[in-house]
Amino acid sequence: MAHFMVEFFYYSEIGEYAEDISMKILFISKDLIAGNLAYLLKKEGHDVRLFIDEKGRRGNFTNLVHKINTIKAGISWVGKEGLIVFDDVGYGKMQDKLRSKGYLVVGGSELGDRLELNREFGQKIFAEHGLKTVPLKDFEDLDEAAVYIKNNPAPWVIKKNPGSTKFISYVSRLENGQDTLDLIKTYLNDRTTSGVKISLQKRVDGVEIGVGRFFNGNSWVGPIEFNIEYTRFMPGDIGPITSEMGTLAWYSNDEHNKLYQETIAKLEPYLRKINFRGDFELNCMVNESGTYILEATSRFGSPIVHLQSEIHESPWGEFLLALAKGENYNLKWRKGYGIVLCLTTPPFPYPKKSKNNYSYGINVHFNGINDNNMNHIHFEEISIRTSDHEQLYISDRRGYILYVTGMGNSVPEAQEKVLNLANKIIIPKVLYRNDIGSSFVDKNEKLLKKWGYL
Figure 1: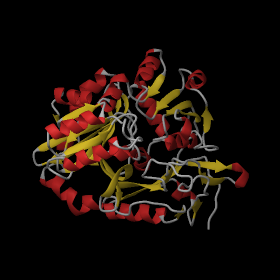
Figure 2: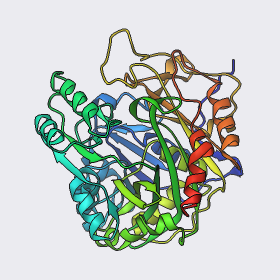
Figure 3: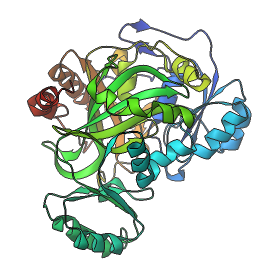
Figure 4: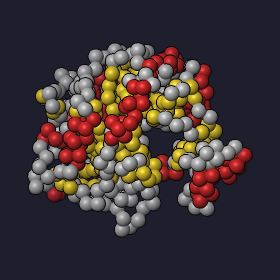
């Protein structure tokens, strides 16, 4: 079994690259949805400081990235010549204020946050800009949601809101929504879920697909990203909805694409108006009647951010700096299909923690993996134990351990690469899906072509 030191220089399959200019980068993460990006920026040669907002997540990336205790100290350190990167929503007011003071910031903006966090507001903005929307209503109280379903029988989807876990999400299979109503009643009887806030959105049938692109405050930068998320826990899209088990994605320069024109292209004036600078995506449901917007992601998405690292050939530091400055950038990228696979352990996908049902402290081993293979492995709940020959170990109790990425000229080729690499990573009780991308090949690609979207 191979054991190697974690190297702090970055290599790609097309050769070594390093930026000519190293800069200070303050990376502010709420709960590490893009924590590995901070690690990659360090490997590009930048001086990186990582602030993890959620206290329970601060044990991760120990001895991988220099961590700090406060945002204030980080801002003082990075200065106006450095770069500040936010990986999540909830910091919009701070981002706007920092930019007004002359700091270089990648993230979102206050109104960008509202597009994602306030679902009713988001749907209103989408409709105002000519996008098709789906009936949706936010609820502060589960009792109100239950009454609403009784009075408005339909196949309702439970969508989580800020402060609740993805695990409460559910897609109704009954046309009258009785299964959704039954589930809400169980949530009301459980003290861990009785106070959650949810949205109800009417179910739309079709192919679910995401359309994303980076924005620099003035215009789009780089290619268009199309992605298919796999949120169900088990192969065959069975089981509870998770944050995500994996994603299939590909890039395109075709701005005439029907799906692009019916989605994010229409929001360019609004994103310019709100000075949005970062990664933006719309999650959609497509069918023969058109494209319906389900929700916005006004931040780095997870795990797509790790797949972006696989697809991009340009260094992240240069690209993010251009976004922060409002400049254009010729992003170099790889053609083909990419897959990112999430490797998890118990208690995932369940939020409840058990003393005997987690993998905290367990070493992670690599069997037959070389330095080049490591470019396709992306950490989340990982740290280095310096007292044990730089051994990597699991440093959290949620179960989102790491991600594996791969690309191919076809989806099956990308699948083979990620599954072969995942099989070489030794993590006791590891859980992952082996069919990311299969539904696209078997059915959804044909439907999207039939409807004129591909």
